[in-house]
Image 1 (cartoon, rainbow, N blue to C red):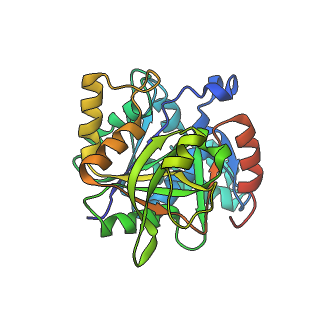
Image 2 (cartoon, rainbow, N blue to C red):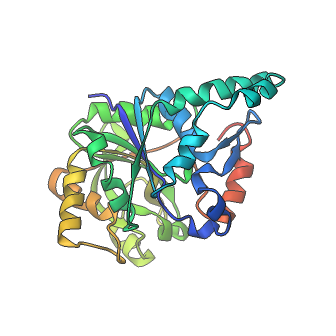
Image 3 (cartoon, helix red, strand yellow):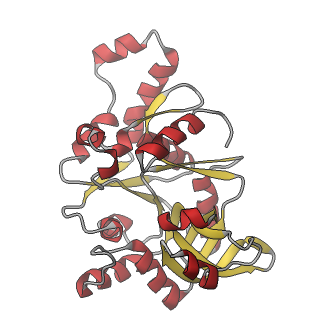
Length: 297
C-alpha cells in the first residue's frame, strides 16, 4: 500500500533556540532556499511531501501553537496580496500557501513526555496505516527524486516492515542519533536487515556492537531523520506509556523501534546522494542556513 499520510512532530519547546523560540516556533524559523525565497522550515517539508504524493500531513504541536502554524499556512489578506503583485514569484508562493494548508491537520501533545509520546499522539490520524515520519528541525535534499519519494517507494516494496533512512556518521555524531547494527541485503546493498537499534550510543558500545558491513572502522549508520513506520509502532508506544517504560524520564521512539525490530524485524535504507540539514541548535541553524541556500547537496 502506498503511504498516504505523514507526521511531523513540532511540539518541542525549542529550548536550545531560546529566547527566539519564545516568539516563534522553531519550525517556523525562516530558511532561504536556492531560489532566494524565504520560507518557514516546516514549509519545505510540506512542499516535498505533497510533491511526493502525500495526501495528509499531521503536525504535532503544543497546546495553542497550532494557531501559529495555521496562520502561516493561510492565504494572505487581500491588501497583502495586492503588494505581492509586484513580485510574481512571491505571488505564486502566496497562492500555494492556502492550498498546502488544506492538507495539514494539527494534533496536540498536551504534556511534554518525549519524542515517542509526541509521535503517539498521531495514532488516530494514522488510522491503521503506515506513516512517513519526518524530524521537524531537519531538512533533506537529494539528487534526482526527493528523499520522501524514495522512502515511499521503498516502503511500498516492504509493506509489513518499518524502514528507517540512515546515513554514515562518525564517532563525534553518535551522541546525537539512533544508531544501528545489521547486514546488507544481497542484491540491494543500500537495504539493511537491522539487528540492533541504540539511541545515542557511547563510542565503545558502537565500536563493539553497532557494526554494518561495508563501513570503515569508525564509521556507523545513524538516523537520517525520516522513518516509514507500520501501525504496530503505535501499539508498542501505548504499551510503553501504560507500563511507564521511559529513558531519561521520557518515552522514546527509538526504544519503541527496537521493540518493534525484536518482534517483527526492521529494515534500514542507506541514503546516498542525499544530505540532511540539521537546524536543531543555533550553531547548526547558522551552518545549515548557509549550506541550504546553495544549489546542490
